[in-house]
Image 1 (cartoon, rainbow over the protein chains, first blue to last red):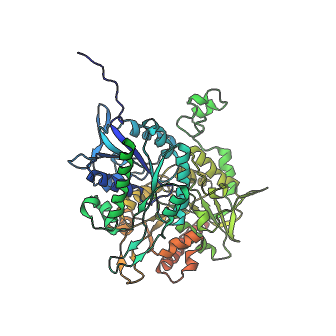
Image 2: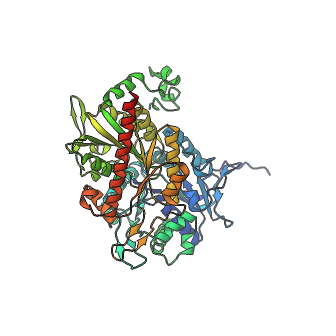
Image 3: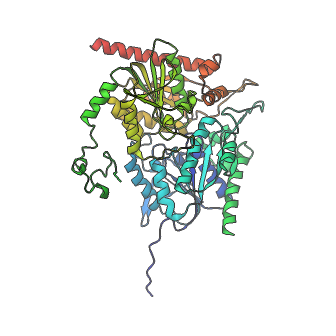
Amino acid sequence: LFSFLPERSNLAGVRHILLVLSGKGGVGKSTVSTQLALSLRHSGKKVGILDVDLCGPSIPRMFRVQDNDVHQCDSGWVPVFVDQDRSISLMSIGFLLEKPDDAVVWRGPKKNALIKQFVADVAWGDLDFLIVDTPPGTSDEHISTVEALRPYQPLGAILVTTPQAVSVGDVRRELTFCKKTGLRVLGIVENMSGFVCPHCSECTNIFSKGGGEELAKHAGVPFLGSVPLDPQLSRSLEEGRDFIQEFPKSSAFPALTHIAQQILDGTSQRSS
Amino acid sequence: DCPGTSSAQAGRAAACQGCPNQRLCAAGAGAAPDPAEAAELRERLRSVKHTILVLSGKGGVGKSTFSALLAHGLAADEAKQVALLDIDICGPSIPKMMGLEGEQVHQSGSGWSPVYVEENLGVMSVGFLLSSPDDAVIWRGPKKNGLIKQFLRDVDWGEIDYLIVDTPPGTSDEHLSIVQYLSATHIDGAVIITTPQEVSLQDVRKEINFCHKVKLPVIGVVENMSGFICPKCKNESQIFPPTTGGAEKMCQNLNVSLLGKVPLDPQIGKSCDKGQSFLSEAPESPATSSYRSIIQRIQEYCDRHHFQEEKII
């Protein structure tokens, strides 16, 4: 028997797509993306991360695979697996740069072209979750990514902020972006929410406190939790270590795993 | 939909059919700076003595915070006229940090008026053009570039000693455009902001690379969030650890100046949120002394530059 197989989209095997956004830079989008992936993996899920930050791709180093190359196969690009387990795979422009210090100095149209390719041409295979990590803002990368993902009906977006008003001010605009583009807001994460001194346990609100939670209330979206500043987390990201596996007693662990649990609960509710 | 005159599709897109400029765009005329426009910008910016760009490859390291404090620091000399231009179109933080939220831009015969914090400190930002804090600017590159050009061409800055330009993170439209448009005047240089950890430095090296590519001198690097002293027990914690040697090592490797390191201080964020100058609110903070010393070094750099220019004439 000779049967024709329909051409299968590279995203056909991906069960849930979610975006990690923020109007503001440096609040922890990539951190939340990686820790969410690690937590979901610990719950037995297969996860992919698509890094569409073309100017500042942070994801590869956070898994210690920054020196890896990307290979092609019949269906497109093969994502980079983080380890032998093959339970986390990544795609980032970071893998395509000849030298890590090379600046990607592109205007919008060129960025848009690569993003379309990243969405369509990565052979993810079967994934439970595809997490899309984004740069700050509401511009080319965001418009193009949402447009390209629309046919695949993303689950929605997690918005990350730090507690202070300057950050919340930008994230309000990101909420508007979600509304305008029809992207469901899964919830808001308040990152860098307090620092507990490891020497004396005094808590200092270095970047203020509560702004993310207030914004969630004001905007009528779920508040996914506050993640404290945790030098062990920062260090794990620097060294490409699995924080969730290695530091379960560290201060950021409960909040990060709670975020993942809420995402999992959300998806199991949807399927039942 | 016009793809934009400087787009790769200029003159070639389906929407270009029938447009009177199609031939010009297809020939690449849109990509080259319009000589009339360049002359117009040159005229407008003739009265600007010093221009400083505040850049970083990385988001959230303190560019806007630093730009605001640099502006306050330089404007402390009432004889100097300072202008702060915020070209972060999607995430304009400057109005809030300068205590100017809710202000709107006024038009006059000579152009747009900057919003003044002090008599000698004027500010411009897309934030002043938005009517609600929820308004999002969801624009692609070409439209952002258009507004940046307007900011330079249509704002009546008057005679300025220092023009400080605060930028969004990255190496994209805004950065290419500002360098291109400001070639009508001269840019003294760029101040690059980073935090100590490699996740930041890896982006900042790209930014320094960008500066070399577009022949923008680097005045130096500021390492922000450099350590935290617990207010209770006074022990230091490295919240953002310099696992690869921090800005110091990077500056050595790339042969650029390290202007200074600024520690974390909860009062900094608070002052920014309140729209007050941290330098005035917390004059005794170690962070304030670091900022003041950095600002002085930048001033000295500009003065040397000016002096050299005069010598050439």
